[in-house]
Length: 268
Image (cartoon, rainbow, N blue to C red; front, side, top):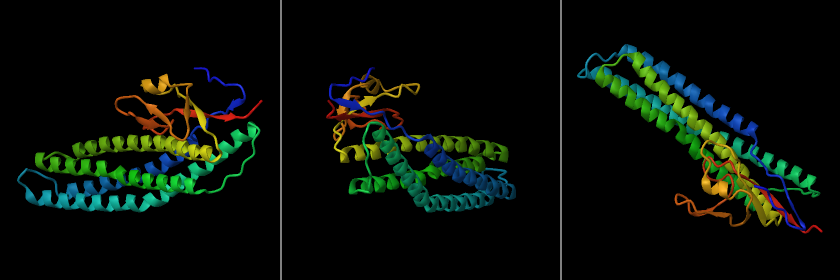
């Protein structure tokens, strides 16, 4: 849809999330996941070979394998917990610096020169971004490790071979990698949108034009219908989707890739 510019105003280009930040964040998440998966496969293989379950009634191998998987679960959850804060801070800072730089560049092209400082509003968004990333990073190994525990116990009960167990673990590993990719992409979009919105409000910009990404296999019908329409930056746009029914902003709903163009008024 054509973005309608009214007399006496400019519509700035949208600020899009930086792909480099997404990929760097994803690589760091993948490095943790890869290391965890290698460790799990190595130590479970060693323990499984030493305590191969022959029958469902064979209690000793079952006990030893349960001890091994519980130990690995605790260790890797601890590893992710410890890595989460530093990685979350890295991501939040990178998003903050890049969104400010992109907004400065766009404003400069529009004839404005601004200097940004760390304001209370931006500090709150930074803290919220870090807290959300910490929670998400800590959650990444949980589903994987629970699935590993289940696979090990089923293998013990059914007397399965090591190859079958490895196949099940590798399937869960693939699922975990896909989730990490979603987190990196979605959080990059959300952080950029939130930080940009805060800066726009600080600059006194009141309105923006919703711009649909026209990407993705299944675009949200309400977002597509709202393409090219105005909304108040401070309050957002009310999404009438029965599953949402609340005020939102471009890029803040999961997997939303929409952006916005700020409306600058006061031109003759």
